[in-house]
Image (cartoon, rainbow, N blue to C red; front, top):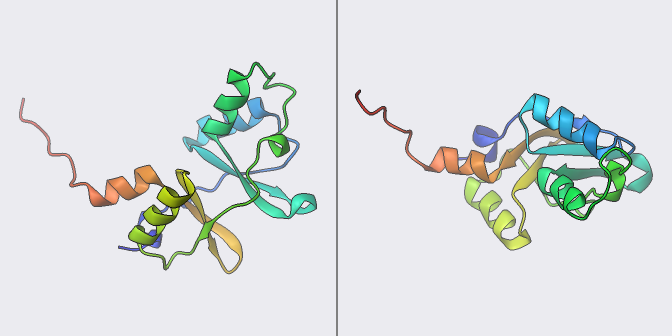
Length: 130
């Protein structure tokens, strides 16, 4: 199975000056665990995850004043739609992260998460009769 079969095509893109509260609200509304941060001044595409926001709040930082750019990972590993799920899982395990931005033609086409991979690998839940 390939990344294109598992990835979410719901790609939330935010700017570097979004506050963490704004990012969290957008991520919650879209039901996603990561946002692509487009920052041409810092090298292009980065990722902000729910863990980044959690770490900031856990440190006592104010989500209304902290900006996405201060918490964005810019050294991103990108997947392509043609990667196998094994390749994606290997990259995640090696890098210690749970989301991969999927690029197609240099543009974000989706995000694949550990949850997406598990959903494809695990058998569908069977309904238990009542």
